[in-house]
Image (tube, rainbow, N blue to C red; front, side, top):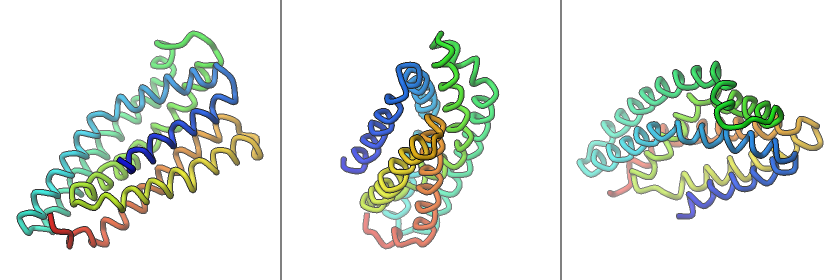
Length: 201
């Protein structure tokens, strides 16, 4: 519960930052993030499959097979989200135009969609490896990863880029992207270290 609270609350904090730039900015970002999250649903399915495979294989005393399953799921998810990311990057204007009419909202929506879908492959790594920890029964590690990436990096950096650096909403989107990259790198590193293999399921 705490793990999901950490992640969800960070998105609310981002919304609060975006709101400072006006209703058009908020509308554009809201449209983009809803489309982005909706498109991630199949990826969540792949991540949950990885979690199930980890739990099953650890229960069967096959930790190496569990690890191979996770990297296979990661590869599948990276390929899927890479293709989806290219499609969204190219057709971002058409997608955003379906939901908003204001030129200002369209500009922010397109900008955020292109920045965030550019890291879709990295997002795939983060999603699968985090769920793999959960499947191993280690819910503490992903909670700390998300707290560090989203609250210690994403929120302060979003504020710094948006205001002192003068980048506005674009700075917020770059901060989100960087936080996802950090979360993916840490999660993949810790998963590869393999301490989760010693957890009794």
